[in-house]
Length: 278
Length: 259
Image (cartoon, rainbow over all chains, first blue to last red; front, side, top):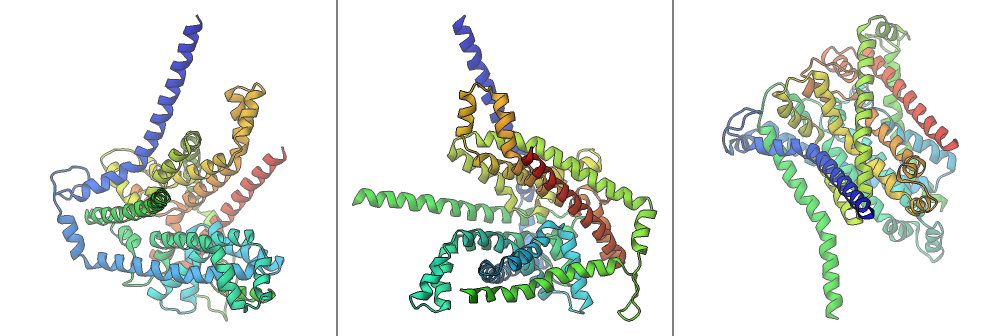
């Protein structure tokens, strides 16, 4: 009798584990299905998106000869790099300034800062578009870049502010007392201590800019497109080159993410080895 | 020390130009009609009257809210158990799982949505279901991560205490785990509902242009027909609705804490 109950519970537990495993695997399959699909059909011989007829690299070849697509890749990368650098610097400086400002000023600025994140992206986008055209600013590369910087800064500040809050306010004071100039106190004391927040902010800014569609779509001008806009304008035609482009992006991102995650592990291993040697 | 406060001044100037001014422009356009210049400007409610007098616009608004609501419910129903199960794993597996779930998010949203097009093309699902699948796919990771974060932060000793005091698994979940995960649920709901209401490329890419949502209307009035005043009025209506629903959600969260 006792044994039976035990077995029953064992079975129940096993069933429970089996269920949770299959649930997680099911969710992951859902997430990865389209990615596998894209990679597979980028090697498809025919134009079909539903039937795989044979292996071919022709969509990659086509992609490399498609100047609009290459331009889109170029603009996406250039805008993302410049927007990341500028928004990280501006956002960090603004965050440091705000952390020392009066409470009312700080609250007000942060509230306004939150607006683009609280609002649907399309509202921010048309606001910027109306602003640029009303002041007769010609839309194109510059307006696209300015808009990207504008929506990236709040994210940088969002990741820098918590670091600043943890910072001991006496540290900068001490540096100034010990004869450091305000500039030295800033660059030698405050910035090094908040570096993790700055790096995290820069990463978020880069991915936000790299992925952005809605704001770019409304604020760019003729002749300047990024990858997202390119994909959007292609929706009516079936263009397997997009699959090739997507596969390329997937491969690059996977390599970068593996490196980012592998480096700390390798470092750790290296350190352990060193410890063993000494 | 105080001198550091001056570092924020340039940014205040920046946000007044790039955040406040564009918002004011939308309001300005929404309350005026086409062809006005600054000298002959007249404020009017015509755009709003037009929106509510034609049944098609409120219907599109209703449809957008409906599909965003369904997306949120489905994301919650799939995401909560998923986040819960991940939070039960060994620490190492948890990191791995979160990495696996966030990995696809690094790939451009349009690219991922485009991928679904091929998969859904051969099926004869309705446009609405196709759009729904696309939305759940795009926004589910936000829900899982928010709920997971709040579950992982939870003090595990509370669970042992509940067990010691004789609570069974279901009771422990209902009385401890669930209430403590509510902030994550609220954050997840916001992060799913907000982009779902205003999304306009998912209906285009997956609904094939037959399934019009409020975001498509706005895009149309800005890009195709060039009636920026009416487009601004639609965006304003949407923004106010969303702000109101977020305010209510926050209130709900607050009420929960009180009770």
